Length: 123
Image (tube, rainbow, N blue to C red; front, side, top):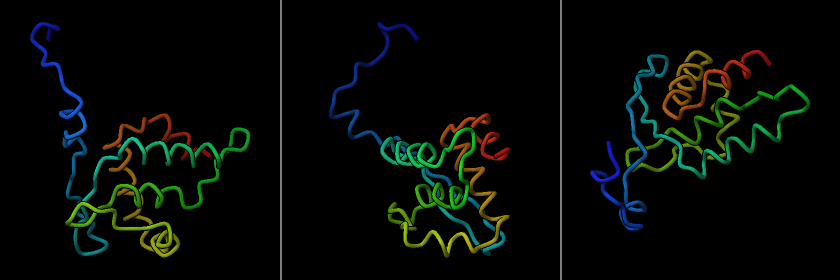
């Protein structure tokens, strides 16, 4: 599309844009589904900051990282994050298959590259 045909957005239009897509994801292990939302810029920064803080040399401490991403993407019907930091230990005690499947969806929805996911798996 050429610049001449593009709409110039105002600050109000940008700040008011509903740009965090939501998907309903079936979770057979939990006999239901959950709603997942794309990360906001703030939440993406928080997740990436956590990864950097856990990195020692070439290794990344993975304990709890998947459920942390889920806590930043799983929302309730009102659109609020469903899990808090206080819930992460209990959430991590749930089915690894369910957690892994939701983690895969979260990485895909948020453009967390295959290389980053592969690096997490290797380490």
